[in-house]
Image 1 (tube, helix red, strand yellow):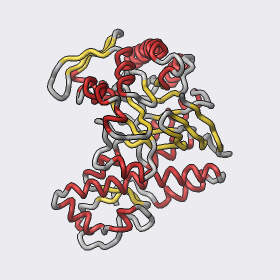
Image 2: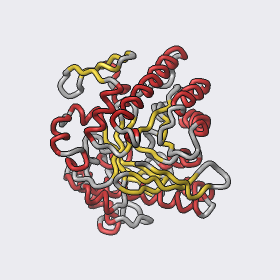
Image 3: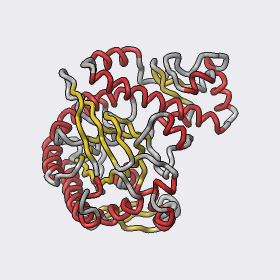
Image 4: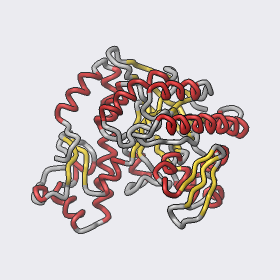
Length: 375
């Protein structure tokens, strides 16, 4: 079962701190979830994730369905046992992957047909089948199948996507309640509506009437300007029930996280922190640092002088830059460890600032120094 309690609220914004209790442990909120698409967060071990203080990661139904396949995961007793991860897993339904693989799929009311990006094989997934897959995975939070749309589409196409998303949500809930009569599988449904306020309001009304344990906002941070993202987020977030966890899908940089928290969001995920780490960039309090730059060649500074992670306590910028230049696997591992520690530390500080009634002051002081562009 899932329980959620709000333990502190900011007096100036909608920011709140809470506790989300799931089958594999309690998670403080707001919380960033690292993405473990294929049953692993890339370039870091489960033990180091645990040591970093991470208790909730994301897996992906689409990718795990295709590889290794349900037969393998079922034989292992679920994704937790298969991956030796003893904490919580939220599984995305695969809706975003369907969105991103537009040339290879066809969406209709019955479900979505697509060709595998791995071998070109044909597949058809219904919203019910996506719930059944997540049952095999043993997800601590499941997501309904939805239709994500890019910015710039016309109103008619946005309505079509919304209507299919709502239809699929109702069918997903019906199947989840058959499989999990006591908990509905801790299923979250997703609000869509593109960048039309009336459609966001309609989608939220249709989705929240399902009375699920939590709700998500989809279709933001999909290429739109930051100002448009903030405006639509500020409009949509209050449409979700106050007393239930709110999940904003697909954000993972400090500027976006502060905007999310300020609008009352409790959960968010993104591949960005681990992806940039594998490509030689790391978070610092001054912004994103590109380790491959020549001016790091002789630098004996840590990645971030204000960071207390094991990587910053042990290694220099020059050494980790050398590892990247030499294409050593350890380079990506160290950068990933640091970035996830940085994110966990940032969220700890955000929660503390909410509890102590100084969230906006902390936000301003952090972003005055932090630069979204590389330094």
